Length: 104
Image 1: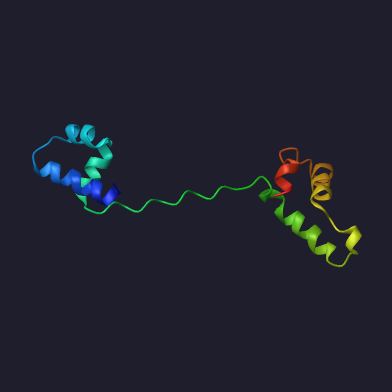
Image 2: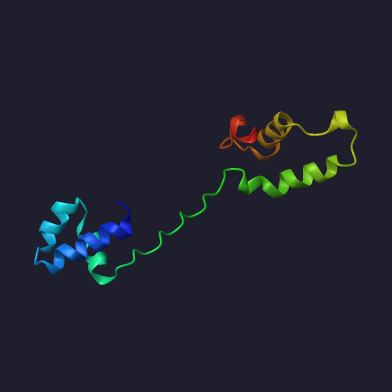
């Protein structure tokens, strides 16, 4: 049963005179769902979850600068994920960043 059908069933049972608490038990939903179903036949859109930041966000500008400088360097001298990780540790003391995160 999708949410629209659930809301319709709750509204139908409410018109039959069933109490809110009985509606909760019958349909296996909480108080807020029953109230929302009685207020509107259409469920509200779900909010998208907030975007989480990365531990690398703080160093993104530094890493971008290194990679831009690498565009002119010979192929063998360019930064790898391991070299970036090592430089972050040495120059910026980035102990909160792990090597596995850099490899993503």
